[in-house]
Length: 142
Image 1 (spheres, rainbow, N blue to C red):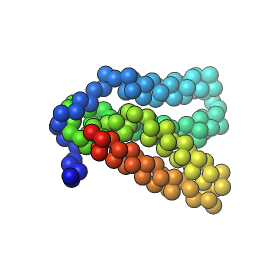
Image 2: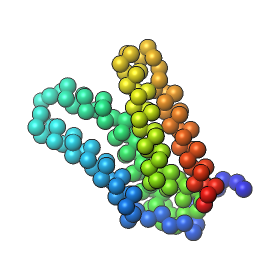
Image 3: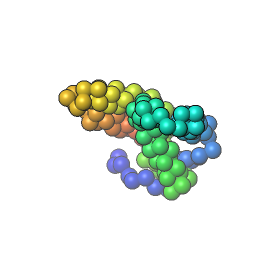
Image 4: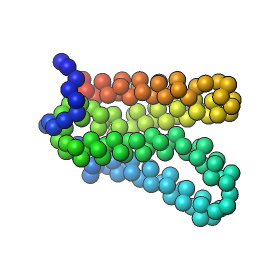
């Protein structure tokens, strides 16, 4: 069995699902927090920097996840096994629940050590490995 690129198939990839709405709501919450911070403390540069430091990794992953799922579902609303595995890897939440804290810790350690402890890239590699492990689970189980 070979891995086909994402394409049309028999598996529905709906965007009108509870997991997708939850993903959007989570991203929206981060945006609302930023807007409230800017509204109540418009000239507080350190507050904004603190927000970006604390939420930067989460925002990056959430934006990637939403964009990836939207592009996948828009391309083929009924996808093949590869599309379905990518879709489930993101919307099941397991990958995000694992990767966000791992990369946040790696990023924080590297930032606080002023780059002396280089953990950002290894933590991203661990997150990528976990993505493909979860992808394989859904691909083989489809």
